[in-house]
Length: 237
Image (cartoon, rainbow, N blue to C red; front, side, top):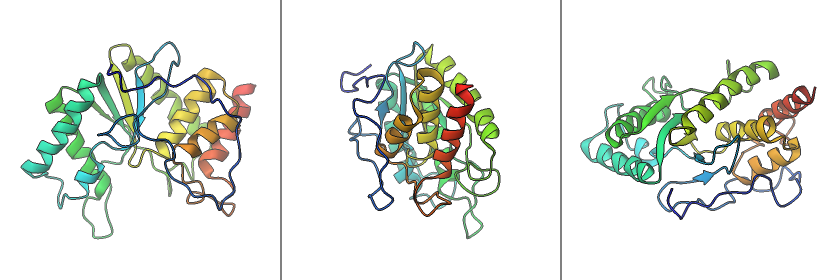
């Protein structure tokens, strides 16, 4: 693994703090890598160290696509990104983006374009690409699922992450790498490291979770965070 990627400690150094809703949200921790946005190694967890989170590595390229067929130039740029990840030791990428997303114009949206582009580029770079869609909001999403359904969604994903980490680095991501990626990381902290839920939520916010956007209580907390609080109580039993 490249020396520029620093192994994070297994727990935060600072006590958890609940930030007011007026506090600006967004990534407040610099990426571990100059090429891939919001790339972070999550540390030693469940005996594995080569597990990473990030924004979609080809997000900006996908935004330039007008169809789900990337141009030669965009595909070449995406392949370069994925080869960079391969050089860092990544052998499996798990995407939470929706490959069937449709925009207001009835055409495949940015997420669908990103999945197509990243899948093609991963194959060229020798990286195993896995699509595991998760929605933030709307029917069948983190907004509407029950706490048990969220566990049933995240637990198999966590097991898959650790399984693939036995044979090489694993990177999981959504679009910005903040919300769906954040709840996945927080679940790992709760389930496998027994972090207090406040610390897991604090880390999620510091790494960019937009809790006011996904809130039913005026921006005090998100439904992602409310799920985590309930999951922590369920795990404690």
